Image 1 (tube, one colour):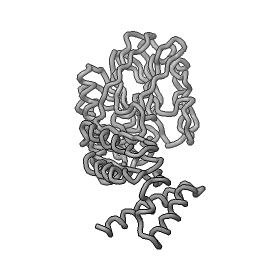
Image 2 (image 1 turned 135 degrees about the vertical axis):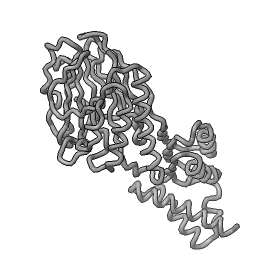
Image 3 (image 1 turned 45 degrees about the vertical axis):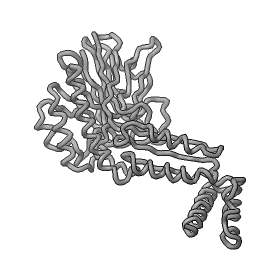
Image 4 (image 1 turned 120 degrees about the vertical axis):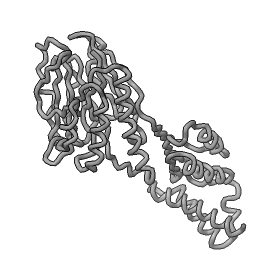
Length: 370
């Protein structure tokens, strides 16, 4: 049998970190959902499994709920969904929307009980609250199943750091429960969990479209194939995301170092679907000030979203002309004090403010001369 495993669509996410392009990011998630359905069809999947957090929360716009339901109705086979900790099964939840009953192929799993199908047995683990310290898979007893046994769960696999009690799942949950495969949701990166024989019987599919900077190996769905009861599954990640989120950090220690960064940005393909966050630290030399402005302009104008964080840069203490180029008097005195503060202050935030103030002081002086 073959099916497609996906999770953490987070429909309705606010995407506040990307400002004015948040709507574009949300629309990309809907487009990625359509590609998930297309991938399931193209790979001849018998069913589609969504393992939680289809929505950002239970307060999302109900028109959006219907849009998602209509997308899933386009799949010719059955769709099985479990509520996650972002969209738990609670009074007034998104799962009370009529679209789920209108669609004959969609089943929202609301009970912890086996679902006996022709080719397999499903063991869904729907969540009813945002946080819990209980293992959602603890009820599963699939050792006596005569067909492939597949679990659907949403939670935090043992060993992954987490500051909240968010449904702990043992690393051997699949073997402990007698499952051939445990389809996981909650974490947005693709992750496999192999047993002592090197078999992977539980995995996170990751989110279908990357949600933020720093996510590793996201923007995928998983095609899972199981030949028979007891056989190890084969897992094939399928790319469904369209946005590329690039987060880079660079330390500057030599003059003219920023020119190479300008060239790197210029070489990025498909800037219209790329979001870039660049952070700089180290020393800013006088000859690099124009390149710094150019970096900022390219980031804000060429890409879907771009932001430059240069608060970690400190004007080079020995840079030719930094202080000497200023007129004698209050301007030069202020610059000397700011440079000393930028270099020696114990508070990093204070150093960053002093550095930016010094750069602005030079810019003001240059504009007054032109």
